Image 1 (spheres, rainbow, N blue to C red):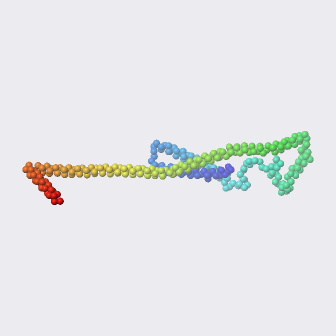
Image 2 (image 1 turned 60 degrees about the vertical axis):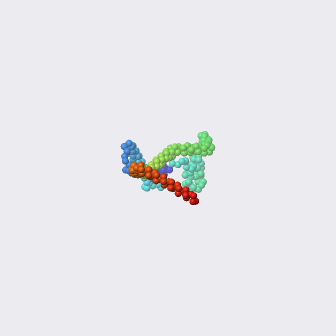
Image 3 (image 1 turned 45 degrees about the horizontal axis):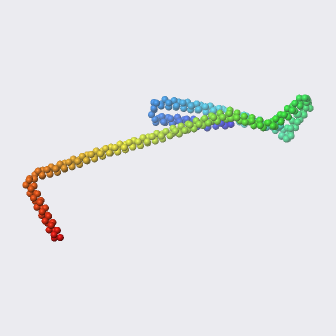
Length: 298
């Protein structure tokens, strides 16, 4: 499990270095297109320095892991003759609760299935026959101890095994899986953050372009508004000049008419006025008589 996680580390988290390099290139492009600001220049330099240092630390760490992987699990490693040691979670299979099953396997090819048991029985009888194992008062204690051990194992063995396995799993999770998962989670979050920052940095040119278009639209609107204002001002001035010229012509015409009338009136004598009035009266009488004759004829 550790080797699989160890081997996947350079390939999986090597993308983090590429993301940092992309961020650096995007920062360089953004810095080349934008003017420096004295109020934020120091903070930007400090942030870039921290990012470069962090990038260098991560690069060195990954390089060390890759070198260790090549040293211990490289192509020259003989896994067939020298396999990787794996600690078993529980003891190997046993017979009769004590003897390993691997001791019984060599007997099967030579003696058959009953061979191991006959060997145990023969060894027991050999020890008794040669009085190597002497029967005395302590032998009963051994029998009682063996019987009680078998009873305790049969009755409480399964429960104890479950409890011990549960405690072992908790310890394994606490001491091994949890730290690895925390590191993986932290690095995954860091990669997601870097990818998000890369996307944001990639969106900066679009954002700048949108702002430029917005400013261009505002300038166009301001230009049109000022152009309309100039048009209205020029139109009012032209109307003023036209009205002024018309007023001047009306004044001249009225003055001329009044001048002519005044001079004509001044040129008429009282005799001419009297003759004119008499002539008008005679004409009116004549028209009245003609009107009466016309009415009578009808």
